[in-house]
Image (cartoon, rainbow, N blue to C red; front, side, top):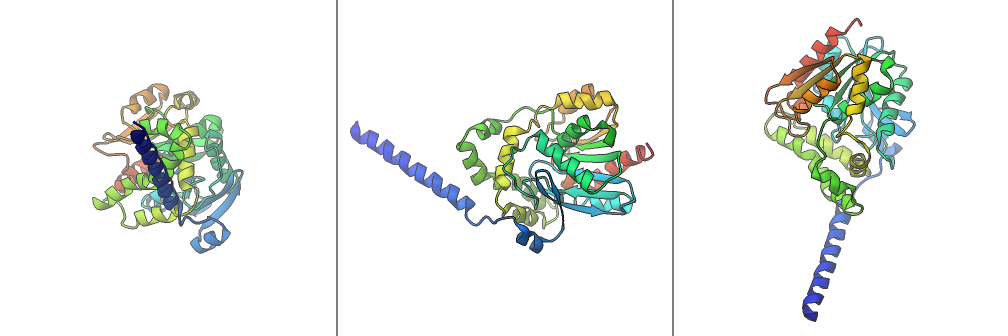
Length: 315
C-alpha cells in the first residue's frame, strides 16, 4: 500500500513538473510590446485612458466615418479585405486593435465593459470624429458597439453587427477559465493555438488570405495576448447582454445584423431573441455561413455593409 501511495506521489510530482515546463516553454520567447517594437512595426497609435491603441484611418477625413470593431481574438487585420470596398465608396474607415490584441497595449485589466467602452470613447475623442457615427462590430465587437451605443445613443447613426455576441450560452471553457491557476495554464499553453485555428482552417480552404495566420502569429508573439483573452472571458459578459440590446432597441437606433445560418460560435438562433429586444433590427442572413464570414466571405459581407450604409446615409 505504501509503495502504491509513493507511486501516486511521484506521478503527481512528475505531472506538476511537466505542466510547469510546458507553461514556461509557452512563455519562452515572448517579447515586450514597447516603443522600440512599435517603431519597427510602424503604423498609427494614440493614447487612451487604459493604454495606447494601434489604429488605421483610411479615406478622406471629411467623409462620413465608419468604425470597424473586431472580435475576441483576431485583431484589426480581420477587416483588411473589407476596408477597401468601403473606402472606394467614399467612406472614412477606421479600425483599431482592442487593448490586449494586435499592437495595442496589454494592460493588466480587468478586461470588462468599462475598458471596452473607454477604447471607443478615446478613439472618437482623440480623432475628433464628427458624430453621429456608424459602428460596425464583429462577434464580440458586435457586443462592444451595442454596449457603447446603449451608453452614448446620441453619438450613433447606426449599428451594423456581424455575427454579434450577446445572446449565447456560456461554454464549458468559460467555467475552466474562471478557475485560478488552471485558467492561466490553459490560456498560456493553448490560447494562442485555439485562437488561430479558425484562421488556419479558412486558409486551407482557400477562403482567407495566406498571410493572415502570419499576421496573427506576429501579434501573438508579444506578452499579454493570452492574458487579455483570459481576462475578457472572466470579466466581460459577452454571452448575456440582452439588457444592453433592449436599451438600443428603445432608443430606436437603426440596427442591421449580418449573420451566417451555420454559425456554431455565435448561433444564428440568437437572432430571434435579439429581434424581440430590438424591434428595428434588420437581419441579413448568409445561408450556410459560419462564424468566419468577415474574412472567409469578405466581399459578400462588405456588400451587405455598403447596403446598410446607403440606407441610412443621410440620417
